[in-house]
Length: 372
Image 1 (cartoon, helix red, strand yellow):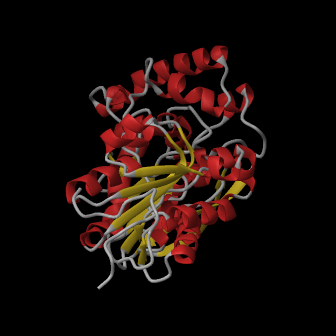
Image 2 (cartoon, rainbow, N blue to C red):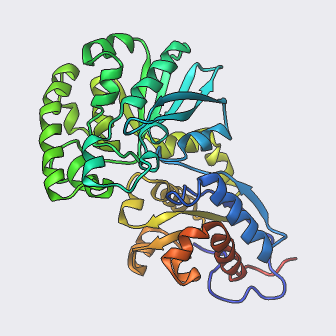
């Protein structure tokens, strides 16, 4: 990358004005993508008040998918649906009347944050996706011709069975969705079953112990037979089938498709045009690890930045990648809130202020050609 700002040295007394694109994902449950973008903008402005900042929060289909899209298109709707256990929750979704497209988010109906208690083997077994099916039904009633379901952050590992049951079953669901474009927007490339499937990879994150993972895998295997029969092909083995506890497989069995959530959001937030005039791209998420580079927001942005020779800075809650991995991904520099705050605990409970401070320090280290 010739002639680009550097990180780590003094900026000097006179530096060029940079065009900075701020495009973070959410930081787990600590900050939404919109909140993270605001914090980064505030911190950057403290150290480099003359830079020109553009804000474009991103999402890969997980928590925050609807909030990000609401800033770019459509109007926010609210519907009361069943949560991941039995309590009802108010779920937000976006309706684009011009294209008759409904954008839903499974985390709004069956997200981990909606459990009301810490994830455990019990919640891992009983959490369901029924509320997602209710949201799909609401979208159909509104006249949707296209339904995009953001997948990620779910508390369930039911293979989308709860969603399918709310639509009347596989056969009835396929009839109801005939003529409607159904899309699963996700970042997960894994199938429904096996060592890289929904239960074994993501079950532990949802409170499942080894015995519970075995039960979930067995239950999904039986359900996969029904899903594949309804689809007429091995939908359960497809890339993305394991997303959101297997809701991806159910979407495929209902006649839908799987698309990159990051690419869908990038398209609607005008990311391509914004990148054309960018000197520095800043992104971030809760935990920057190897998975971040495969289908998630940072991986998608890294590829886009590398193709355009735009320096990429990553600000994350925690970082689990070493320098060679960062260089290979095209990341100029990565900074962790946990390191800046001095503890993971403070990084979580005071995320916005700590991200503002970390950004200010990082921006102050940006160098550039002398102005004029």
